[in-house]
Amino acid sequence: MREITKGLRPPTRHGNNERKRAAEVGNAVRYPSDHKTFLEQCRAAGQARPTPLLLKYGEGDYNCLHQDLYGTIAFPLQLTVLLSLPQEDFKGGEFVLTEQRPRMQSRVEVVSLSQGEGVVFAVNQRPVRGKRGVYRVGMRHGVSCFRSGRRFTLGIIFHDAA
Image (cartoon, rainbow, N blue to C red; front, side):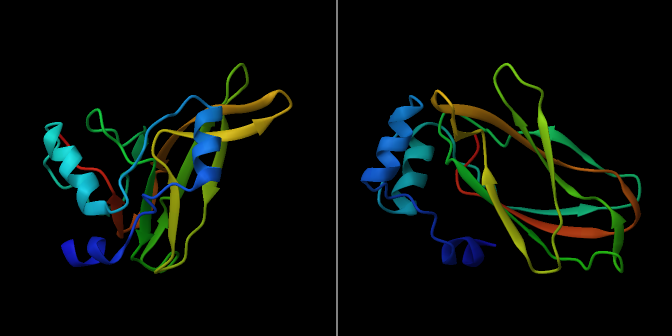
């Protein structure tokens, strides 16, 4: 697991455009230029437990909508990779994202993945441009109920847990 996550380089360096967009929604967080330094910041804040996960789901299993926040420091993106073959290894168990928009109904997106494909998504919030400028949308993710079979998923969260 360590070798896989080491090979992935989260984009910790913010350019001018990213800083401007972050400032528009009131996010002044600055990330170090490398992931190792970021993990050292996690440890200094008491977040020393690695968070990459190998998840196994079976018939009747599901994962409620949630956010992978494990302390005061969080990297804004995470990755999920499907390791099993849909419709052969399992049925059901779709990956679900919800957007909780201010003063609006929540919006759901089902992400269909093939074996070996991944999805990068927001851990907590993402910026959205509206008619009156940029605003934050709360994000949650989960997995719908499995009807049959078994599914394995790799979850990579770039911040450590307390």
